Length: 226
Length: 298
Image (cartoon, rainbow over all chains, first blue to last red; front, side):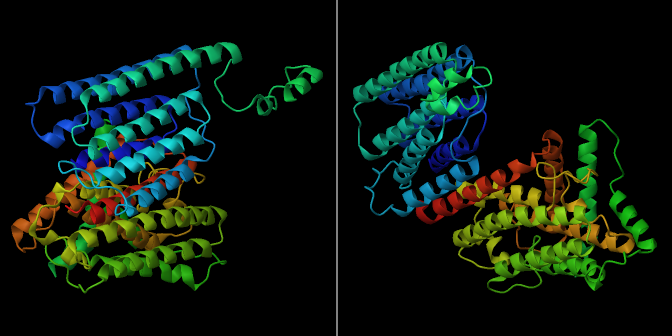
């Protein structure tokens, strides 16, 4: 139990520190797999059919389908293989450590996890959610933002599992499906952004023209800047 | 006495084991296991040349570096309680090691060579970061076992430590600290002799003869100490004393040396700018271990 939680939080830290996009996606897949194992381990039995179904569904979507979609959009949009952080990787790692301390030290203020779950499940969920936010705001590419969004969702999922006893299966499955559709849409959007602008950098156009003028006539680059 | 004898005699042997493992991986026969001893004897027979620009610091440093490391070794339980132990010897241990590093840096700066200075600056930078993680790891150990002495910590209160996730995190982090402190492969290549990239070797460029021997011997002891700490996390000392314990100790140390050899063979040296990131990550991992220990409750 604790092992899984520590694994989940470690994978979130890895995401903060890794510079290769493909490895980032693999780590998200591993995180999803760990997360899907959690409900079974908490109950400790394979007897309940809905539980097993939910584990299988979560695993299929979080650890197989979504990484596959991400890899496909990575291939189709021909993205450079490195993340481009706005704050340096060292700093984001340190910030991640700060987030962990913040989340763990507010253990008293947070609601308690329901019994089969370990008491550190709630601060772990909070840490993962906040790290997801950090990934969302501190990375420059659309793909890395999708990854940040996934981490955020993993955290929310963990929250839901550890706080609400008998979370309705149908709601959980609905959320997972929504997420899958969301990733689909984002993949298509990334592809189209790529087709229209030749890159998926989310910086405003003006800062891009700094590198461009050599190829453009002067008046045109000025127009772009404005 | 046995403790002191093992501490004095065995360290260079484990360097031989690491070298042999790496050679096997590379498909070579490799140097004999006792090569380091031959090197030390050879160096001891030589004379020393001191540059005119050096001061007394360079002459004193090798002996003192060795002395601090031996001193630190007296506080570590190998498989039985250490010869010297008192409450709080954790901090003493860490600071004796830091003092040894300080002397090494001073001697490197003393020769006035730019390469040695560069090596010293790198060692200081990485040392500062790895020491942070080292202290954090020690604090975590102290919290887990409710003891502030190495001899108390590594007896683990009679339970096997591997049941806690925090210990595995600590093992990883101590292993990384071991590699950093002893300039092993992902951080620095002990075999390289390209001045621009090396750390530990760069500081020893102007040291020769018996002094170099002492420095290398000191490096071997330092590796030995960190191996003891790391290995104690997964295979705790029993606390007893006798031939089986000594045998077990050597078995686990040789296992650790083989692991280091494998890690060194399967990794390449990191870019210098990537190293601090690795060390910061290490610090975050130890922090996490501490948090999980304090608040995990189990």
